Length: 286
Image: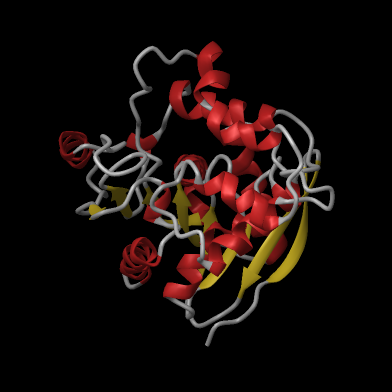
């Protein structure tokens, strides 16, 4: 049975995180969204598997946690999530992270292995090669398409939806789950609740920070897209990279490739979410 989430407020350094919680039949799964997203990214996973108990925070600088102040980083997000677990009375959880959220999941699992049973990484979390020529000072240009949504207020969700799907060719503009996700981004003034400073700080950490992925000791499931942005584009994780990861990380299980999906469609479509749900079930069942 699908249950509507309950929203909790969890104090963290610089403010309070908004956290949506659904309690159902499974052990709790901490679900961590990507760099420019929000907790409703998990709408499709909830639809694919209503029996999952999910803890879904808006990370600092985004949506319901937009007002949280202070510099952001993968480590800061991991510290915030420990506060969430403490506030909810959860000793250990399985963690599912999408894109940048996968890197946060790795940071949490390696920094606080006592709190994490397993991780599911959705097109993120393991090292990604920066695009050719990308340097920290060029990140604003690289993220210009994503940050363009901050340039003006939108005249409601339909206006924002048209802007958002322009650069996301595989997402269904008629999907009510997408509309709900985007509505959660918007403030009362029609502006997207997203801090550009936080986005760029987190992106710099993902591409140029140190990763502790080789210290992972928990079971790891990896779900990855066939393409990066649209059909025919090179994936974030080509087959040769996956082979290297498996050779070096004993706890990494056979990766799951989502056919016909790019980065966004790996979770923001029903087909992609079904693969993610299978990966989550695999870690929950041991």
